[in-house]
Length: 108
Image (cartoon, rainbow, N blue to C red; front, side):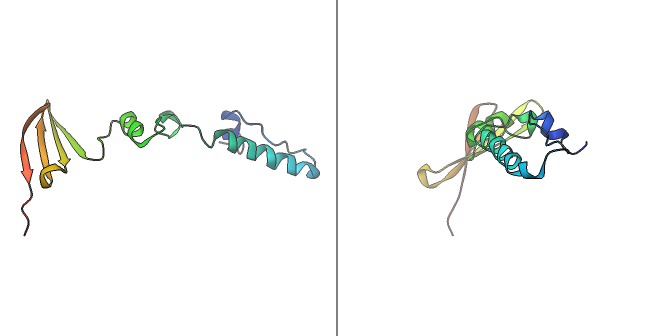
Protein backbone atom coordinates (compact mmCIF):
# COMPACT_ATOMS: atom_id res chain seq x y z
CA UNK A 1 0.00 0.00 0.00
CA UNK A 2 1.37 3.40 -0.99
CA UNK A 3 1.59 6.34 1.38
CA UNK A 4 -1.80 8.05 1.46
CA UNK A 5 -3.84 5.03 0.26
CA UNK A 6 -5.32 4.44 3.73
CA UNK A 7 -6.29 8.11 3.97
CA UNK A 8 -8.05 7.98 0.61
CA UNK A 9 -9.83 4.75 1.59
CA UNK A 10 -11.07 6.51 4.74
CA UNK A 11 -12.44 9.41 2.66
CA UNK A 12 -9.65 11.90 3.35
CA UNK A 13 -7.89 14.11 0.85
CA UNK A 14 -4.22 13.47 0.12
CA UNK A 15 -1.82 16.41 0.31
CA UNK A 16 -0.52 16.95 -3.22
CA UNK A 17 3.22 16.90 -3.75
CA UNK A 18 2.90 20.18 -5.58
CA UNK A 19 1.36 22.04 -2.61
CA UNK A 20 3.10 25.24 -1.64
CA UNK A 21 5.13 25.17 1.59
CA UNK A 22 3.25 28.20 2.92
CA UNK A 23 0.00 26.15 2.93
CA UNK A 24 1.28 23.58 5.44
CA UNK A 25 -0.82 25.13 8.22
CA UNK A 26 -3.95 24.53 6.15
CA UNK A 27 -2.98 20.87 5.62
CA UNK A 28 -2.18 20.37 9.31
CA UNK A 29 -5.52 21.90 10.31
CA UNK A 30 -7.34 19.72 7.76
CA UNK A 31 -5.71 16.65 9.32
CA UNK A 32 -6.78 17.80 12.79
CA UNK A 33 -10.33 18.25 11.50
CA UNK A 34 -10.34 14.65 10.25
CA UNK A 35 -9.11 13.42 13.64
CA UNK A 36 -11.69 15.49 15.54
CA UNK A 37 -14.53 14.25 13.32
CA UNK A 38 -13.66 10.62 14.03
CA UNK A 39 -12.40 10.80 17.62
CA UNK A 40 -15.77 10.09 19.23
CA UNK A 41 -17.13 7.61 16.73
CA UNK A 42 -17.49 3.89 17.29
CA UNK A 43 -15.30 1.83 15.00
CA UNK A 44 -17.05 -1.11 13.37
CA UNK A 45 -15.66 -4.61 13.92
CA UNK A 46 -14.56 -4.76 10.26
CA UNK A 47 -12.24 -1.79 10.87
CA UNK A 48 -10.67 -3.14 14.05
CA UNK A 49 -13.18 -1.82 16.57
CA UNK A 50 -15.79 -3.61 18.58
CA UNK A 51 -18.88 -1.94 17.19
CA UNK A 52 -19.97 -1.09 20.74
CA UNK A 53 -19.95 2.26 22.51
CA UNK A 54 -19.81 0.72 26.00
CA UNK A 55 -17.83 -2.20 27.48
CA UNK A 56 -21.03 -4.27 27.72
CA UNK A 57 -21.93 -3.57 24.08
CA UNK A 58 -18.37 -4.39 23.00
CA UNK A 59 -18.47 -7.74 24.83
CA UNK A 60 -21.82 -8.54 23.22
CA UNK A 61 -20.55 -7.61 19.74
CA UNK A 62 -17.50 -9.82 20.19
CA UNK A 63 -19.43 -12.70 21.78
CA UNK A 64 -17.51 -12.40 25.06
CA UNK A 65 -18.89 -13.16 28.50
CA UNK A 66 -19.62 -10.36 30.94
CA UNK A 67 -17.14 -9.45 33.69
CA UNK A 68 -18.55 -11.87 36.24
CA UNK A 69 -18.92 -15.01 34.13
CA UNK A 70 -16.98 -17.45 31.98
CA UNK A 71 -18.75 -19.64 29.43
CA UNK A 72 -17.20 -22.77 27.96
CA UNK A 73 -18.83 -24.56 25.06
CA UNK A 74 -18.06 -28.26 24.97
CA UNK A 75 -19.79 -30.17 22.20
CA UNK A 76 -23.48 -29.48 22.71
CA UNK A 77 -23.10 -28.28 26.32
CA UNK A 78 -22.69 -24.67 27.45
CA UNK A 79 -20.99 -24.58 30.83
CA UNK A 80 -21.25 -21.21 32.59
CA UNK A 81 -19.31 -20.35 35.74
CA UNK A 82 -20.62 -17.15 37.27
CA UNK A 83 -19.18 -15.31 40.25
CA UNK A 84 -21.90 -14.33 42.75
CA UNK A 85 -20.98 -11.98 45.59
CA UNK A 86 -24.07 -12.45 47.77
CA UNK A 87 -23.93 -14.97 50.63
CA UNK A 88 -20.17 -14.55 51.10
CA UNK A 89 -19.23 -15.24 47.50
CA UNK A 90 -19.45 -18.37 45.40
CA UNK A 91 -19.29 -19.61 41.84
CA UNK A 92 -22.56 -20.81 40.38
CA UNK A 93 -22.35 -23.66 37.88
CA UNK A 94 -24.94 -23.52 35.09
CA UNK A 95 -25.05 -26.13 32.32
CA UNK A 96 -27.22 -25.50 29.26
CA UNK A 97 -29.11 -22.79 31.14
CA UNK A 98 -29.88 -25.00 34.15
CA UNK A 99 -28.41 -24.19 37.57
CA UNK A 100 -26.66 -27.32 38.88
CA UNK A 101 -24.85 -26.12 41.99
CA UNK A 102 -22.27 -23.90 43.64
CA UNK A 103 -18.56 -23.93 44.22
CA UNK A 104 -18.09 -22.29 47.61
CA UNK A 105 -14.94 -20.97 49.19
CA UNK A 106 -13.94 -21.93 52.71
CA UNK A 107 -11.80 -19.45 54.61
CA UNK A 108 -8.53 -20.57 56.19
